[in-house]
Length: 456
Image (cartoon, rainbow, N blue to C red; front, side, top):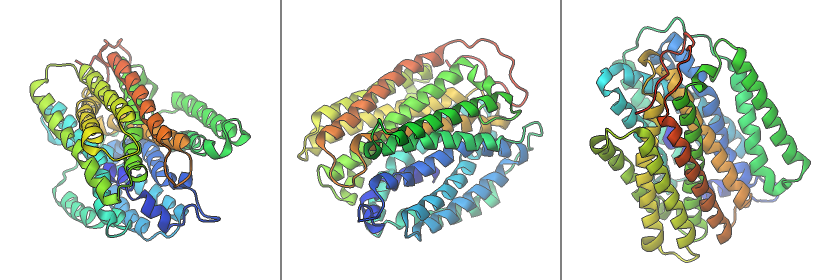
């Protein structure tokens, strides 16, 4: 639910914008509309680790059920919103619920699995999230036929059913009394830093790169980022513990996760907007057009786990990133102003699906496999947080390239988006090599559990 909802509104963007008055005189711009995506992702990223810590300290089931309830109710409120900024506000609440569900869901899963099956469990968990994110446009395309509100209302029956199952079937484990109270001020500083970075990037086409407002937003983002880093070094239970970043494999996994998801967001959103605004596809046509790529994600993940289980995750991540980069280059150079789905879009999209299936599950598994199960909520929260940071940056870069208008994207802007995505993927393929390095022994903080070692 949390991964799907991050992307399900993408196909509904034009319908949603028209309904809420985007680009009408005095109305919001498409850049404003981007905060429906970015506010969700920023809040999600900032609260993942604090909720992971709360789950470690007070119990996974309580945090999971509370987050699921908040997410479901906020989804209904989103559907009833008649104003962009009201919708953004309820998206923030929805993201808070998602942040409570996500890390606890992984720790609940790992607790239920024997040690020998946990690596496969993490891969399956990560693949499920990747499938949901990639299938978001397809689901959104179908739901938009009944009105954009249904991209949110669909969470009501699903959430209600899950609440019943969770209350009856999920077993809690003994809380970790040594887990500290999370640094909520640090989470605010982090959210402010990422949010201001997104603001500067999204508004740069309207403000101008040399304007004082752009410089102020980016400068304040840097200042808050520095304050966040300083606070994290001193707080007993920071959002990101410095000891985690001293572990070579974990540090490079975070960098690679950010880079990969910058490109993933650009690749997915540019593809959707290109289909709709260059080729003139409807929301439903777009949804089905992008559905074929995600089908290969679970197939690739399953086959790689079955036949490539002895290959280091770092090498599979590199291979997946390079395949995604090749897909982006193919789409950038092959697609023209006229529809040519079978010869250009489809081959590139299928290649990208294989790349995601290789890279993303192994990124999550490689970064979290040596975490203690009773502290997995915290560790997985940091990694998932990196995914959301990458997504926010990717969305912001896309709007910085295409501008804030709701009209047609210029062909050269569309091409630039894919080439930027390819460059980020090429960088991710290089940083993934760091995950295979042998980490130096470090003195881990008591609340962190075992985090050292190399990813093989």
